Amino acid sequence: MKKGFLIGSLLIPAVLFAQKKPTVKELDKWKTQASSVIQERYYQYKDIAFKIWDYAELGYKEVKSSALLQETLKDNGFSVEAGVAGIPTAFVASYGSGSPVLGILAEFDALPGLSQQAVAEKNPIAGQANGHGCGHHLFGTASVAAAIAVKEQLQAQGWKGTIKVYGTPAEEGGSGKVYMVRAGLFDGVDAVLHWHPADENTTWADGALANKSAKFRFYGTAAHAAAAPDKGRSALDAVEAMNHMVNMMREHIPSDAKIHYVITQGGKAPNVVPDFAEVYYYVRHPNREIVMQLFERIQKAAEGAAIGTETRTDFEIIGGTYDLLLNNQLADIMQVNLVKVGGVIYTSSEKEFANKIQGGLGFKADPIETAGTVNPIRINTGKTTGSTDVGDVSYAVPTVGLRAATWVPGTPAHSWQAVACGGTEIGIKGMMVAAKTMAMTLLDLLHQPEQLSKAKAEFHAARGPGFRYIPLLGDRSPALNYRN
Image (cartoon, rainbow, N blue to C red):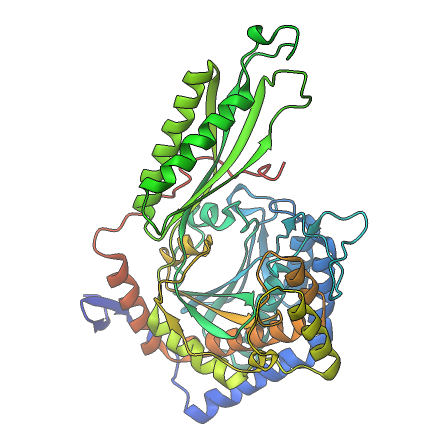
């Protein structure tokens, strides 16, 4: 008979309880030590984050960014497996042995078209097109910092347990984590931590939208637009017809669904009937089943547009992500640690920078001082608007994350203001909040197996009986050139 502990109907292996439980005083001491070590290396981690900010590499092209984080982990005693899940810039770094096995996510991709200097007015960097408008240069660095701090305590104290850092490329539309989940890289992991840059400090318990994306391509017949228009069949007409049908469809879809598109190719010259055109679509909803239904309707719009314009169409799935499966047990643990760490306090010069940023937003933002506070957990407010491939991870293993104030309050993600903040001490201070909070939470999970067991029981109940993971992007290989 297997030995373990029953929580509800779930049998938790006894091996998770092998580590001696510390006193509250001992655990607090270790948390303080981890936080102090991270703070002592402030300038080291700042240098790493700013290098990745300078690299500003797009999804699946983060060669230098990934290599820098891998090198940092190797230098600090982690073994690194690179190029996992068929993705050259993805990696898994590991340290330790035995249970529990705790993961931490590290992102590092930038966004196209968001080049910006670290100044409080819009001013792109000459010769650079991309920018870290979602702060992933801070994300990856903080995760590495937290993992190293906990690894050093594992090593010094001789504790059982394994820490894994997942280098996860192309979160911005490339669904990098989905391929890593599909490849089984999270099998056997007991819990995963993540975080995200933001304009506030709080534990992330508000969900995410499921998302499916694809590029629809149309193939027509080129001809002289003036001398022989009757001989041509416009691929651009097909794109426009498709978009018109989808826009009419918006009246007849759930009110909480979102559909976005951009025309990525529409021809080269007005006097040539375009024989090729392409449009890039996203569809989102809190329920992934509805996402799949809406996507099928968009497919029909593409087929109808092709028939009506006498062109041919196909499509390529680019990405697909699950909604975020929340774990209240883990969220409560992380929130306690975030409150201990506290928020971001600005210097007088940083306040001046922040006032300029807020002055150009065009709307009234929260007071600057709110960056120094920790907000209560927002659980299921129904205000979720974004999507993340962390969603797929959350259906593979109990997962929890936080938001840290790396941006001036009121700053929207994916903006030049977010890029600017991420290149200043404001961004680095928020990054340190995240790193310390995650390190403390890892220590809780290493030494409080009963909490980890409850989190796993909640996870299994939330997924439901008979859950089977089917990625929304299907069995396609990683879309390594989706930014081309």
